[in-house]
Length: 417
Picture 1 (cartoon, rainbow, N blue to C red):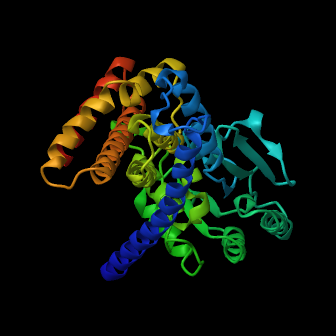
Picture 2 (cartoon, rainbow, N blue to C red):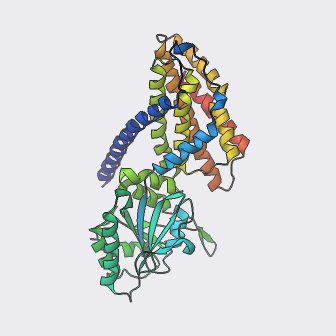
Picture 3 (cartoon, rainbow, N blue to C red):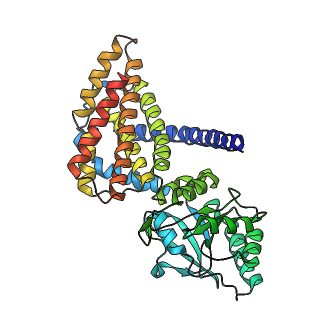
């Protein structure tokens, strides 16, 4: 069993690495294209190398960042999750504990069938199809027919409109698993991956009994994910939140690669998933920066790299799902890609690399890639720290964001020099 688990983890890593490399390759081409298209057009037929370069201040970094962030958010894809469970099992509490915005809000639900409502938020790239409640008195065949019709109808559309996974929620406090539940899970497992979720788990022995009753149903993970979405106090004992990270990770593992970034953006539980996806963006940007700097273009490297670096920062922000104010964006961009910071760091790197490498565009490419990679990694760490503090109820002050970014950035450059 341990060997199978280890092999499964290795296979997931290999699959994720392959997907990561494919996306990075596409991103490199895209970001290089943006860099070239961002170059100012020069008139005349004389020597273009002598034409004056435009002042960097003519380009509004915040506006470019905002545009790129919107584009990156639109490219995240869209994930769709069907959530089934009887009334009172705690579906809404579970959903709102997992996603970075409360999606299970009655005011935003729209009927889809007699037993299904659609919940979504324009800023969150995940749609939930939540059941109004699967009750034992309902006609089992009618309920199953409604679910299958929904899944089939969505399958006719684009891949990002498909139902990608089903969470079947059961209250772990119930005394037995009904045949009603088992038949619904078994029939729907033939249509879409099914994850069984035990909610409100406070007694593992009772959960063990329920789990034994579902043996034979083809579930993802082969067993239930045991969750407690909110802390529970029983007498003098407080039970902590549990199982949310496991549910998020399992869901992420089985989602198609095309919509995985959407789910990673939407969930607010496993920050490391956001970090991993963001590093693919940083790798692509670093490669694009090196390629742009290696080309013999008569243009300031700082001006050439700006669209790549702004796109990188915007892409990372989109994956993390961060909502930054205008002042925060301007402050961070001024520190990261404004006058002075990149140039000084570049000069230090050039000095170090000149002693070990041939000159010319080779050094320019190495410096551009290193600067962009260090900046991207520093920003990824900043975003992760901001979310951790936010979850702890201690938001990071704006000045500290800039100090954190530049401290990590400088430290990374010193290691790479």
